[in-house]
Image 1 (spheres, rainbow, N blue to C red):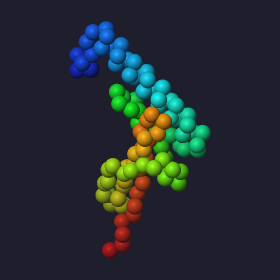
Image 2: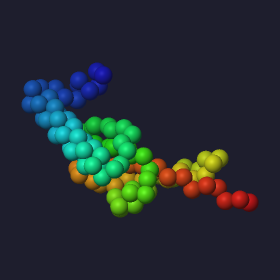
Image 3: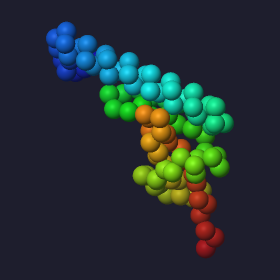
Image 4: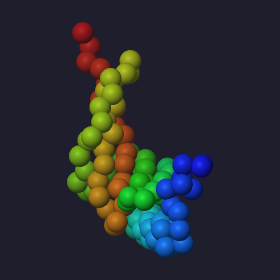
Length: 103
């Protein structure tokens, strides 16, 4: 925590940082509300200095988000892809799994 306090010294710097966090919290709320109306299930959200990140349950509607996978992990049950799409001022993420092929 002391590192964060050292990063934002002075009233102006603190106000600027707080303003970013308030703005990103509002962006996250707007994105969650839109996703909810469109039938997505929201799993979790994270607010940071950059865009908020909202994780949704994978579903057929995720294709409409026009996302791209940015992370691929090979597991015993298959390949897990983590997808991301820009949406309503936030990043939306979800995961899909492709089963291993039979040898």
